[in-house]
Length: 281
Image (cartoon, rainbow, N blue to C red; front, side, top):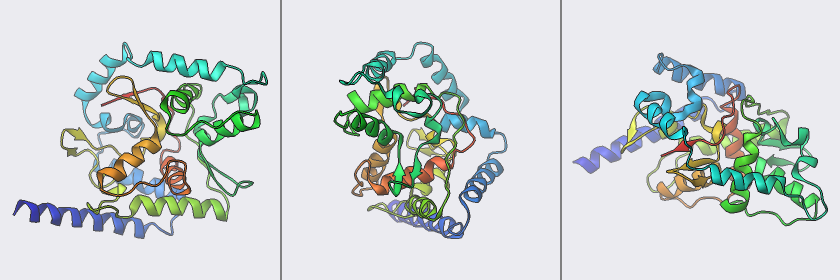
């Protein structure tokens, strides 16, 4: 009986996710974002939109208090220090990351991911860092290497704290990439037959085991995050983990599939400020 009830619930959630995705497939990116904001604020009128930068913490004063206590003495400062060292260490040619990124790398993270017309694809912040390395004769960092790319990105994001997320979707090809990411977000996947929206739209504010479920609006403003202390996790690593939990094979990090998902995902946080180096359970 219990298994039958669970399967019925899963089917209902997946169907609802599909219907929401289908209903908004012809909407503009901005209309998609506004529809989600309206959905959340109508469902949780006592939670301010600006509080969504805290993810699930916005729905739990107790969790926010625990977070504040932890952040008095962040357990990951050594990781950020190593990221700063990576950022400031010159390449073999004597140049630095700041020399080949717009505005010296400051207050730019909120523009990523972006659609690069010259490359005909979505480019993430990690891609921009590796492009900088290549332009200076250095090998690319593996996207899943937290000792290099993870630490570097975590520190570099601190240079954009307070910047409002500013993802742009302009032009036919950019819209196609956005729609591809949106389709993945609302599509069922894996043996559990869930979509990203099954949790992060329909079940926001509910518990999954002992964890509150967070809204997609505000999701991307603080990645990479430090889990349970100083364990660094990037956004696309989290995507891969979600695929695995759904018993699905995850696309490769840095693939067109995940970059397009990140493009759609990040647009949903447009107008919210970046807050880097946060602790999560």
